[in-house]
Length: 189
Image 1: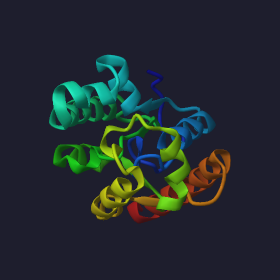
Image 2 (image 1 turned 60 degrees about the vertical axis):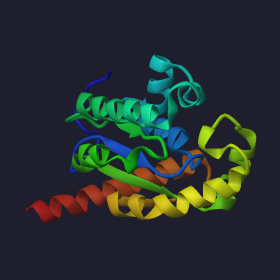
Image 3 (image 1 turned 30 degrees about the vertical axis):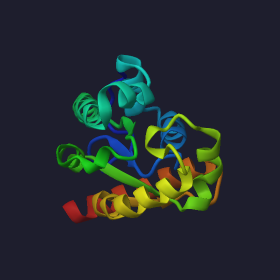
Image 4 (image 1 turned 180 degrees about the vertical axis):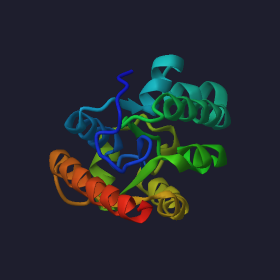
């Protein structure tokens, strides 16, 4: 993993992207890391590389086993990225784990905010999400309603991703991170 100091002065720890399934955490995170010249870690991709598909983990070992793997993966990613500007995207349910909430507390947490209209086409194209089996949109809406307060509570920054391309949103996020960092530096003076 690329180790370098944070490319945005005043942003402490890694930049962690949270939000519901299909919101664009992986696409925006990867693009943002590239813009910043930072490393990028997609915790779902790390899990798949080490343990097989998420759908297989759910089918063979259950959601509880997946959440344990996910919590360890997030903790390892954050620990490995300490003191760097690494961008880390988390799976939609990762923040439900209290240990994960504590681990990301020392990071700059960005909540990618959306609505069901924003993700509907993405969900329709991807049937491999085990928690969305059956009526995918109905299940997404139910999960989002339960998780949204957690996302909002953990976020240092909220980025509305309902409008704009990945490139536009990642540039908007970089500008927001820079403003946030400047404000944090003022507070610390």
